Image (cartoon, rainbow, N blue to C red; front, top):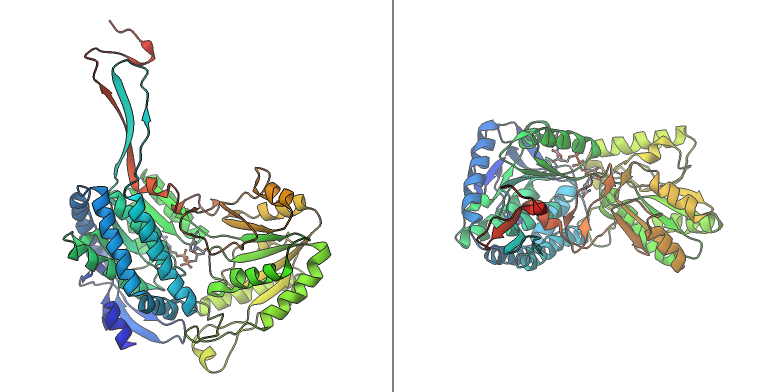
Amino acid sequence: MENLFERLGIKEWEQGALIGSNRLDCRGRVVEAKSAVDGKCLCKVRQADAAAYELVVQAAAQAFVRWRDVPAPGRGEVVRRIGQAFREHKKELGRLISIETGKILAEGEGEVQEAIDMCDFAVGQSRMLYGYSMHSERPGHRMFEQYHPLGPVGVITAFNFPVAVWSWNAMLALIAGDAVIWKPSGKAVLSAIAANSLAARVIAACGHPEGLVDVVIGPGEDIGERMSADTRLPLVSATGSVEMGRRVGTRVLSRLGKPLLELGGNNAVIVSAGADPGLVVRAVLFGALGTSGQRCTTIRRLIVQNSIFDELKELLIGAYKGVKIGNPLEEGVLMGPLIDREAVAAMERALEEIKAGGGKVLYGGEVLSGGIYDGGAYVRPCLCEVESSLPIVGKETFAPILYLIRFETLDQAIGINNEAPQGLSSSIFTNDLRESELFLSSRGSDCGIANVNIGTSGAEIGGAFGGEKQSGGGREAGSDAWKAYMRRQTCTINWSGKRELAQGMEFD
Ligand code: NAD
């Protein structure tokens, strides 16, 4: 562990405020950064206090003023080098993510790869910050739009993707010319310190102010709310639960700032009778059990056509029985622990509610004990047969519970998909073109992500990521998501030498 910390620049005692990789002396509460693998303390962290927060924001604001003058392709070159640093530290950073969050090593390293991909994407984007040019209605006039850096931006992240979600925001913000203040989840602070420090060291080596990337660690109700209310941060991107999104969104909007919300999901997969069951089972295993069911895009509802329901149910029970649960750092393990005991308690409460509401537990749901299981929060993943009208099915329980729901007609299945208050990700398994096209049509899925013959999780960074309804409406990572991190300006230039008014108005 010492070696890992050394390679990643993590100190024995950590501070909750970093300007780049420089620690500030904080006066907040001392908390433990814990391993999800065995519950042990990895390091103590003194959280940021109001004074440390203030210093961080000032440093970010000063760094922004210098950074916005660097041409965007030059900013892209710095991000290219940050991507290189992530490549060189992929194994160590991936391992730290696995230790802190409990996801298996393949997923920990996959998360770092996502950050690398995001850097590559942002480098290309740095030469493509396009604005439209328009034909003016006035002779001798030229009109166009341009995009300028926005300012220091706040990024609040959830525990389950401590590095990837920051990179979706930070890499685009950096090429856009912004500084980034990151408030990570208190459950994954070391991954944040390590990733931010890697980026900061590259920035410093390139001769730019390290304050372009900063970290503040503290409770959401304190540091997070401070950021939401801070008029110096024109944009606050927040990833987490719907409840958190409501608070951040309301606070940011009340000062007429821009919130960018990436919130909870309640993702469904529709399985049509003609689907390939082998493909469905493999996709469901990854989609429902990856990150131990703690992804925003985790498959939570499997809506299966009646004629194949029983066959698929048996196949899934068989596949779930074969899943090795244990230390996420060991080869062959497919499912590690939940993040903590609170998450286990939430899962247990949900199971009680399912049973009380007439749902049937088909497999799993037990809390595991003995050996390593005693330190961490290990559970057996669970399959339940339910009616979609059961109230708990409309909620996101952040645990590996998969609801199996029957349907007869595709319209009915799409109705069930869309009746969830959240609208993040969705998919259909079918070999019938008409079914997949209906699912993707305006009468189909109402989610921000809609897939065919792929599960709901594991998105690539090239597409805009985000959801509708209670999932928050934000879009990050791919496509034109960069625009959120810039301010847009419409310019009209009169080179005619005459005063011409729009709408053909006379004013003489
Ligand atoms: P959470 O809502 O408990 O916390 C998320 C972040 O918000 C943390 O950094 C937390 O400290 C902060 N926070 C909490 N209250 C706050 C407040 N009042 N003001 C400002 N910040 C506050 O979520 P979690 O348990 O860390 O993560 C799980 C949730 O995140 C799930 O709902 C999951 O679906 C969602 N998530 C969404 C996406 C997405 O892209 N849509 C990605 C990952 C996770």
